[in-house]
Length: 259
Image 1 (cartoon, rainbow, N blue to C red):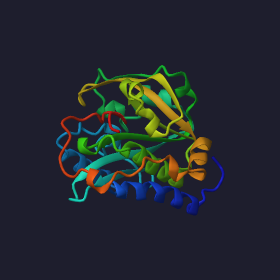
Image 2 (cartoon, rainbow, N blue to C red):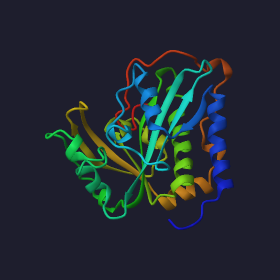
Image 3 (cartoon, one colour):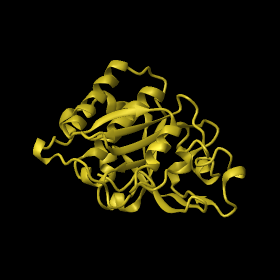
Image 4 (cartoon, helix red, strand yellow):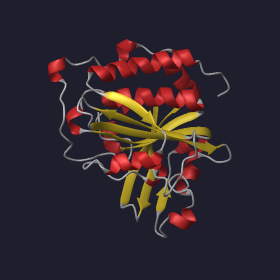
């Protein structure tokens, strides 16, 4: 993308989502130190371990090439997390990046297990090139699910990614049940294909079969410039905002399972 980003337009876009999150009892903030992010996520008893592409010990993220979102409730307890990073695929494509394991490890030869594998058969993955923003690791505490927080978090992530990078593509990997249950619609992605990543990471204890979901840079720009407060979920009454508690299980291997 070559057009300039309008900071005021992005600010208005983000404010809409931030305001709705506040009505649900959630205070959002953004961080850039992924060592801090891993420290936060490791302390969440119901969240699975963060994938290596967001862990500095396996895939360091340069300054300005990644960020994370955290939401806390009125008791300052973590209620949601999400992460994003930028891949420079100007000389490659998403399918190659996944299958080489470079999407997960800065140095696959050093860090990958000999039996680690990733197969990407989604046809469009070979056409996803250039500046590619990748979102993942979404987790929402169980007592806050079903309140539209996935849509709100996706909106914040889209706005921040657009402002920071104006990427050529924005993408994620999701579990198939996310499509079956209609959750992907909340992630504001316009396209999806099966075969995004059949992944096996032995030392990470990860075996996944993910769909690829994505949006083009121009579609992302259109989202930001044409946002409408009416498309967001309505805020519940104050009495319906639940506080405290933890989820009984976690579904955050991909961007998945929370709503």
